[in-house]
Amino acid sequence: MRYPAPLLAAALLLASCAPAPEPARDYAAEVAALAEEAWRELLAKSPYLQLKHGRLVRRLPDLDRRRLAADVAFARSLLERLDAIPAAALAPEDALTHAVLRWDAEQTVAGERFYWLSFPFTPYVAGLNLQFVHQAFASYAFDAPESHAAAYLGLIDEYAAMLDQMRAHLEGQIERGIYLPRPALPGVIGLFRAFRDGARGVVAVAPERLGAFEPAARQNVVEAVERRIAERLEPAFDALLARLESAAYRERAPLAVGLAQYPDGEAYYRFLVRAHTTMDVTPEALHELGTRRVAELAAEMAAIRDQLGFRGTQAEFHRQLRRDPRFLAATPEDVEARFRDYLARLEPRIGELFRRLPRAPYDVRRLDQAAEGSMTFGYYQPPTAAEPVGLYRYNGSHLDQRSLIFAGPLIYHELIPGHHFHLALQGENESLPLYRREYLGASAFNEGWGNYGAYLAREIGLLDDPYDRYGWAIFDMFISVRLVVDTGMNLLGWSLEEGREYMRRYTFQSDAEIATETLRYATDLPGQALAYKAGLEKLLELRRRAQEAAGDAFDLRDFHDAVLAPGALPLSILEENLSRRFPSGSGPTQAR
Image 1 (tube, rainbow, N blue to C red):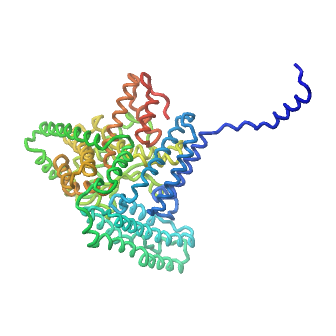
Image 2 (cartoon, one colour):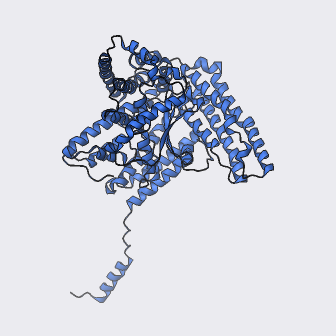
Image 3 (cartoon, helix red, strand yellow):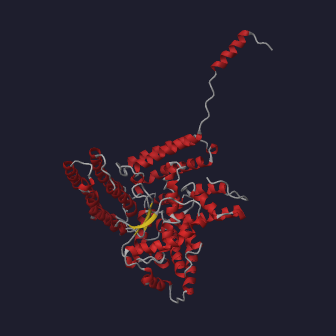
């Protein structure tokens, strides 16, 4: 068919004016860009991450509400941009990044309403922050004399400002009728008194640290730092302490503990339960789970006592264990030797359980003594550029009161195959975006894996001695009791004494340890202690399901690869990922 020339020309003209098709969107690149943006935001706020990456720390945590408002605005923007990326169009690894970014942004937005119910000056919250602050000062390198000296003085101002913000937060709570429970005050005051007394020794600069400076300039810097400590830092400590120690604050501070006593406190606790367990689970369900596990473990412990020929009560057996010299250390060096002995038992067996091993070494080291009075045990410190070793920082105080009956499960939880394996491997996995490589927002994964590591050691026979088995039961009982006591005090109306009495009845902990632990649950980190047992139970459930799906093809190392390769994840996201890795009726697919 022939078209008239004018019509053909018009058609060609219209065709030439039609818009060119838009290029296909690169969804993977968009997710990567969002992850990089979120990482930069995170790094700018975290002295810990700056230290880990060998960066000069110039800013300390900003606790002001305006900072939270900025964080929430960023999270909302992130959610809008994530909504524009169809998760179904992403490769599995990119979909995980998309899901993690969404989870975190949603948590930030949902948590905004609870700002005044948080207490940034409690021993675990403030204690860990202040330890990293002191590490930033102690590791500060004066490589560029003029700029680094000025930045160091600015860092002292940042430290003072952080303390001022804690005091401002406290004052804002007072205006709203929110007070830290009175039983928590001595520990908080003791913490800040210890850090105040030690601050000058940490922040002051010895002349030998200033080798890059001219001799005359060294003394100027030393004196300028001393003045800044005296004029800004110590007064900031003193002002905060004066408010905490005031009779007016103490008189208004409630004797009751737990979040439910505050306006909107129950909603905040339910938010924290979801945030820390990273699952849609209710506090009531966790309380019931804990009660059931406590009963099972009590029966198991009674059976071991019978096997050992002990005919007294549990309390009598525990008193005997606490005095037993086999389980007491004379010095911190003895504690470290005990931990290293348990590690040596496991090291030859690691290949049976794992294909991927972290490159970073691991060791044990005592806590800063200023923090020991307010921490029951200690914590795992991942490798950093300044300290490229994964460390279990243990509490070395009052050793005559610290039985090491459960030293095995504890060190397997903290180092290998627990925290060190998953956190060091995650940090070394360069295929992950930095946001996920440094991801610490999955409490139940982190603590659940730590407990799973101790469970594995027991499972392969490293804790077969009756006393070691009893030590494992003590350890497992402790984290099971946490489910009951944390929910009891924060939601179900338990008093502090009821929580302590429950712990005395079922756990091995001393009265001093029970005192700090119950305050941790009810006044410091509500909901966080739920992550330990809830995470372990979920990992064991997921392992059973993977084993059923894979059948005879199941290899435990495949499961461990599947859990560890993506790094820490909220457990709801991990569950979905493992269901793809171990689809029903088939062996595992390629690791993601």
